Amino acid sequence: MAINFELVVEQSQKLVMTPALQQAIALLQYSTPELMDFIRQEAENNPLLEIREYEHEYEQEYEHSKDEEEKSEIIDDTTFETLEGNFNLDFSRSNAFDWNDYFNEELSYIEARRVSASARSDEGYIPIDLYTCNEKSLVEQLLFQLQISMLDKDDFIIGEYLIGNLDSYGYLQGEICEHADFLGVSTEKVLSVLRIIQKFEPSGVGARNLEECLLIQMEARPDTHPLAKIIVQTYLAEIAAGKHRFISRKTGISLKDLQNILDFIRTLNPKPGACLGGSGCVRYISPDVLAERVDGEYFITVNESIPKLSINSYYRDLILKDGEEMVQGFIKKRLDSALWLIRSIEQRRITLFRVTQEIVRFQKEFLEKGIHFLRPLTLKKVADALRIHESTVCRAIANKFVQTPRGLYPLKFFFTGGLCGPGGGMRSVHSVKTHLKQLIQDENPSSPYSDQEIEFLLKKDGINVSRRTVTKYRKEMDILPSYKRRRI
Image (cartoon, rainbow, N blue to C red; front, side, top):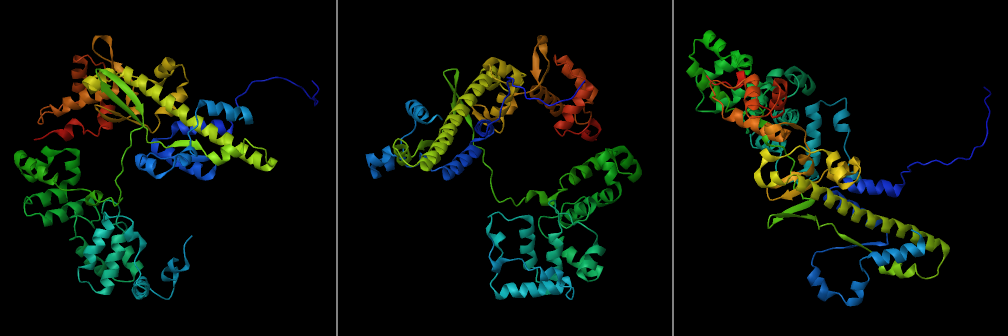
């Protein structure tokens, strides 16, 4: 067959993802805070857009004249048609990092830190990160305790360095000999400063491993069991494996006394630094949708805190007049963008309302009776009921939360697989996990249920699961196996 080139005219259908369409899809995935940030950013970039805030609405009524209020009139359907018909729709040098402190080959680390500290004290230097949050991080708390420990300058620098090498759990990273070589001091000097840090609060920080962490806490506890240190030093791996009878046989301690020792050890904190995250902020979740129960019926309201957008009155009047072609072209482009954004936000609100309404209708029993009545639900069920695509439902529930009389839930919570329940019905995975957790909570501590026994009990209650599924759900809920849950 001969190969040649020729021009052919043909018709074909294809989906083109225009920037406007991509924006509409992205808006559907945004949570309320993300959407508010996006709206404010667009308002800054598009002079035709204005944001009408709700704050102090009644006070502004008396402060502004009627003419000024009309300048930010909100676009309605008629205005849409009219407009679309007409237009066819750095850091300063003083704060720069001084690399000479770290890369000066003639100075040791401690000498370089001395020079750096004296220079900063002369300049009245205060690190900017001290102002970033009110809550003190683990490092800040330890540095404060180091400052009041009355150490000489060299020991303070060593302590500051060691604190900087603690991980988020409070454990010292690296070997002592490596730290000593880097600091240019003896290992005994480093160890002596480390022992001081290990007396700081929270108890257990500065340890190099779990055993040392537990022993440090035991030293500070007046109620430490006399045999607990021996058990931790010798049989820590056996404790984790639940080999209680082996430990009892090796040590000659009765099972009853051993249980008391293990109960004490479990009161110690294996991650002493984890309680001080140092994030400095409290994260609040703003519900995107509200589901309120009134007279037995649920009413859906999309979060109304999203600012309303309007078209600037000056540009609205300007586009209706004749003007320079370049100016009119710029305004037309910005107007099309503004109208599309307003319409996309409204479409997002309608889609979110419809999807949430269908979810609440389907999960009404859960909202009224609790977790055991949560029904299996898929994206396809909601999509078919609303006659939209599954991907639209997926984007609509992404990063969204709904406030219900039963609590605040992510919309994705209501979408879960199911297992056979009593009477041939279906039980959601969340419901089965709750049932499994309740069985474990009610078990005899001296003879906890194995996964196979839990499988039998669930089947007895009409929930058809396999032992492998029981093990999977137990691990997902961070529940220990039976031999580790057993109390002597």
